[in-house]
Image (cartoon, rainbow, N blue to C red; front, top):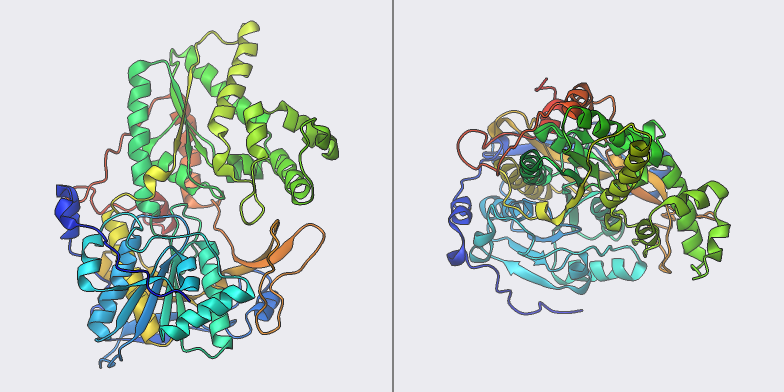
Amino acid sequence: MAAENGPSLGRLASVYSEVQTSRLHHALRLPSVLCSQFSLVDGPPSSATGNPDEIAKLFPNLFGQPSATLVPAKEAVEGKALKVGVVLSGGQAPGGHNVICGIFDFLQEHAKGSTMYGFKGGPAGVMKCKYVELNTDFVYPYRNQGGFDMICSGRDKIETPEQFKQAEDTANKLELDGLVVIGGDDSNTNACLIAEYFRGKNLKTRVIGCPKTIDGDLKCHEVPTSFGFDTACKIYSEMIGNVMTDARSSGKYYHFVRLMGRAASHITLECALQTHPNIALIGEEVAAKKQTLKNVTDYITDIVCKRAELGYNYGVILIPEGLIDFVPEVQKLIAELNEFLAHDIVDEAGVWKNKLEQESKKLFEFLPPSIQEQLLLERDPHGNVQVAKIETEKMLIAMVETELERRKTEGKYKGNFIGQSHFFGYEGRCGLPTNFDASYCYALGYGAGALLQCGKTGLISSVGNLAAPVSEWTAGGTALTSLMDVERRHVIFSSIFFSISDFALHKRNSTGKFKPVIKKAMVELEGAPFKKFASLRDEWAIKNRYISPGPIQFIGSGADAVNRTLLLELGVQA
């Protein structure tokens, strides 16, 4: 087992910009329930999002445990000193540092004498026992700052017997009372597995999750939003607004903007609500309507032609990163490719394509060569196509150009079309968190500390009533197993999935493995955000209703504004 790998230099606040410094001194507010004495009230026994019988077998020690709510108490409970570890898991999201600060401050104020360890480089730091002991001076420069560089993140998972044993050894060596896992749906699934394992081994280490992902697809009634979504969408919306002004100024470019969101189109939808593009493609709608790539191309082309008739040879089109995954015919092709690549290899002569079904082979050969190559790239650890590497925006530009040329020869189009491609991705992951994300993250961390002090494990820190002032927010924890279902995932590597208490955590068949997963929250076509968008998009398509939100504001008008998706979902904005 590795020891602490030397001191971490950390940040120097002395070199900060004026804005960074002002954010450093920004006072964070807490829900009133966390500002005084509190106690924990358990709710009713929980179930699961799907397949509860299967989830009960997979998590015999945790399944059915209630969610919990923090409520005011008359007397303070004297908290003993705790030893708590924290780990960042998965991609960066604005506000992660404030979650850590919230945990740290809770321990300083409610469990004096506590020790906090930051595991370095994600879950690998837990397995290898690589950590830094956090103290006031070390934590200070990261308050209200973007990034994950305080301890850095990683995409490793703790899932084999050897890895679980390594995590156990680390927990025992550091005498951990608690471990907080800050991550998305996969990371919080992993947190639940660790909590189950630790409880099965009678370890004192309790595990709490925190909801992180800019994609906005980790949410439910009890967890209204994941942190980072608000900030990332506002960063992207500023950039989209700039592109809109450029389009209107030059009068000759169509900007195709691909946005983050591999599995769900929440970012594209929110940015559309903030900026009013001419077209915004929502993957979930494409899937529901069983649209083909030609349908999507014709939809864009029809609007380009209508705008040309009005003298507008420019526009802005928003595309979710995972669009190609939503097109049914492409889903079928990808499923066949996943199955083929899991057991076979691609030959240079192209004979391998004969193993595809005829329709899939025809579609594959119809795609531009660059997209063909991208569909054959190495799969992610779950056996899925890495859609972030598929340049969907360039594919659509090429397909729209081809269709417009056809219409031009038929005399149906007389305009000019020049496509410009953009991918707004990493730019949104590490910005200075908005006032909302800064406070939300701080409350999530502070609440996680309270849950650990109350002896809870296998919960995800939950903060609610988010449309109200921060003082009126609620805090508590939601049972992670209540968010779970089972799902088949293709696994193309040799490691096996660990079983807990002799229950297998997957079911095998000829095409893949079943795993417990926290179900991703997709854009609901009957939900208020999409309905709002759908009611306005026809006007946006033809008339230029562009909005340029400008940069994120920290003081003054709009500084405390919350993203439209959350407000619409909470029913406080028409």
